[in-house]
Image (cartoon, rainbow, N blue to C red; front, side, top):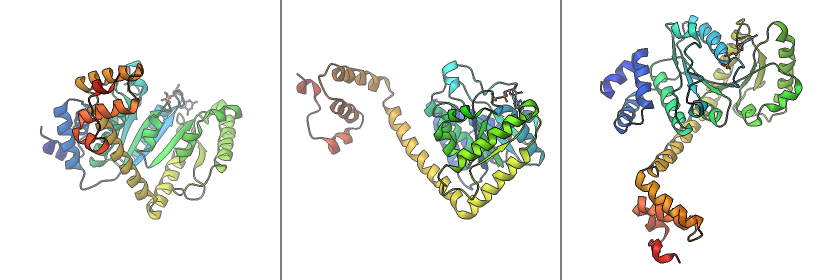
Length: 342
Ligand code: GDP
């Protein structure tokens, strides 16, 4: 199927077409990349906008249980829900933790839902692009809500924060000491701190944990993208499906405020800018990833290691070989390293 025909299928909301389109954007084959790029261009207009919800949390905190319960609640209301995962850990283990087929079993069978597990064996740069393009495909397909899930490790939450309109951090009930363990960076990107497992024996602890986090949030500087009272901490039980309506109500209130205040558009524009420069960076780096560039890079690297040239000079030499025009702007010096080195 050509990119135009596939674009029409995606626009009609056909979930199988969305799945096929995501497989296409995940491919690294040059001909697939070209078709994927054409497909994304066909879909860029008219622009449809979903609410993109980022969700992060350590393994075991209840992300899949939460997505199952929360996603079902929304899907039952008639909203179309897509779930995507950013899972850099799969690059290490070779298996996809978030791709486990048994997760979100009910949601995956719901006619209003679409779940895409993360592919394994991808590096973070690839994960970011693939997720961003998958988000664009789901938006074009008319999903109302896109849940983008990540385990809270490394840079994956930065990727998710740069892709989402609202960011949820799922936390476990814990004592005061453990509160320190939450990285400041992620606290700062979160809009809602959701303390899960507020049920049974854990309920009292969850309530206390929530109060502790609420206290910590009050110490953060007020961000321009927030109305009064945000970021906010709240308790839920994903297992017993309690507190989920409140989470949804808070998300809707935040989205409405941001839309009316113009913060929504500002954030989306800043994200588009971020991804533009990221795309440039990745494309430039890919130019260094050819056999010839790698071989030349290794030679130059040896000269740097053994002190025969400087890192700056070696980099300029390699760049000038990849882009002859680069040398004109940077240096009129001889690029014949053999002559320059002792
Ligand atoms: P994930 O690794 O973050 O996706 O976590 P899971 O959703 O797989 O949940 C990890 C464990 O916590 C499972 O045994 C769940 O049954 C349990 N769990 C998840 N949500 C809740 C909850 O709201 N209350 C309780 N008591 N357990 C929960």
